[in-house]
Amino acid sequence: MKRFLRNLTLAMVLFATSSSCLLAQYVVVQYRSVPQENIGEFLHRETNYWSKVAQKAIDEGKMSSWALWQKVGGWDLPNRPNFMFVNVFEEKAHLDDMGTIWGAASEMFPDMPMSSISTNDLGTTNHQMVLVGVAGEGEGPPNYIRVNYAKASDMTRYLELEQNIWGPFVKERMESGNTSVKTWRLAQVMMPAGTDLPFNALTADGFEKMSDAMVPAGTFTEGTEFPDLTELNEVHEKVYIQTYALVKSVN
Image 1 (tube, rainbow, N blue to C red):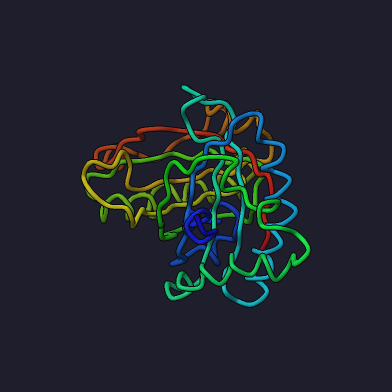
Image 2 (cartoon, rainbow, N blue to C red; image 1 turned 90 degrees about the vertical axis):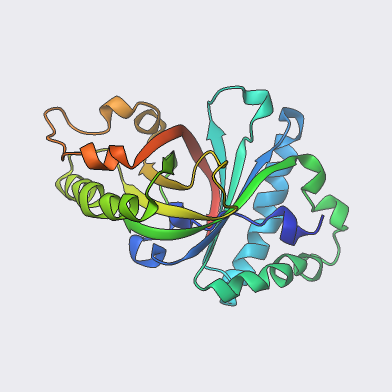
């Protein structure tokens, strides 16, 4: 499969960009399963070759950022994706450049056969989707992110409540130093779409340390007064929460 299809990644370094850059960005995300015996070579090729291809596209204004994240822990590990690519684009039209972006690899590394660069055969693509960044706080990229996959019953109201209730609360906690959260992001899934999808939106909390990302109970200082989340909880539910570690990012 061409790099365009293989690395069509989520549209959110939502996880890695600043909040001001996040708004209305298009994020392409791809989840991949890489067997344990292939992880070393997979990481070598992605960090030494494809990250440089992404950097070239960013320098040319075709893409805003690229990042590779590795899952930390989880359940049913042998059958779940363990890596996540995230590509961010400033404008929808820039998605049309995906083919030329990844096709530049052969020109950038003319002495390397594509079989020695490609990671297509080192793993399996499980899911890929396009998101739109809605809101965010804090500067990234963090070292770890805790992604809260959500199913919203009323998307419009859910996005409003996240921005009007939870977003300002997290911002105040971050500014006062009363939380281990370093970044907060909100995004809506645009494609694929349908009622049978397990989630249609997500938030991502960024952390400096893995211990902070892995233990939600210690996210806020003791005695923190939380806002009333009754209505927010009525229009959505968290269907899955997963932690990822940053492997490599360029912007």
